[in-house]
Image 1 (spheres, chains in turn orange, blue, purple):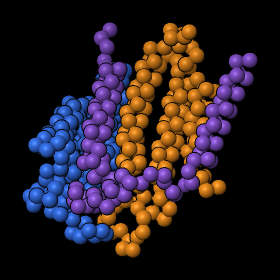
Image 2: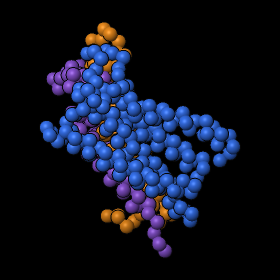
Image 3: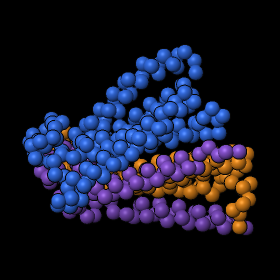
Image 4: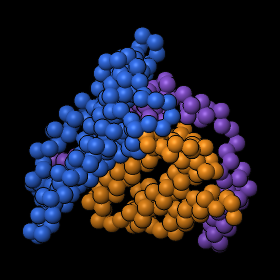
Length: 115
Length: 149
Length: 88
């Protein structure tokens, strides 16, 4: 039971994969990829947690604190969030263009790249 | 949109802008920074697109392009300030000049806005970049395929 | 047939991920901590910033942030390219 945050983030990754292999709507595929990103981000942040730690910010920190949560995973998660945002924006733009040209969002009906 | 939505937007708009500017400006003291504050201000752009429609904000695209370039150039130039030692060297920290104060005391302290050297300037550069980037993405998605876009 | 294969592969993957989460090192006790302890202890003296995360993002690991800004720029340029107005 102590490792519940890791398990929960991995369940999020699994749900994202489930959406990727069972859905065909491009918007839902984008949502699935976003859910995978959120699981990975949660996993990264929870890797850096120290028991009893406070946020790694000294402004008005409680005076007698013992531990600080590790800051490096948080900084890298910030990077990962922005990159995930960029890829999500690009995927949505592709979905809009595909709908405009093909009239459908069903990935199974877009035959040009099949095979 | 209806008059209720427009009125509420007019009330919320300055508050959201001020909050985003606060998050960017205090990035070296409190949780937040350029990316987060930029996202807050870009949400104001999204709100304007929802309320007034993308066509009325068409003229902002050029301004967003300029802001994006200014942010990127300012970020790289601030990184080049420390080229005497290494790239990204924080030369302004502790120099006594702009943002050059040392922290008030080691450990927990109330914080001083005039610290941290190049960090607040880089926060503003990245904040401008994120405002322009997300704002133009929202605007382009709302304008695509329209005759008046 | 194909559907059963995908289902089995998915179950194996999810079981592997959850097992990895369970048998990883205990939550709250990170394995290696030298670098983070250095950042926490020295960020106030070296960068003069109270926020350790910001001092890592913009000072210690500035190159990461430069690459991130470049990725953001590339994504915005890609969106503008994909959603451009085509004549005719």
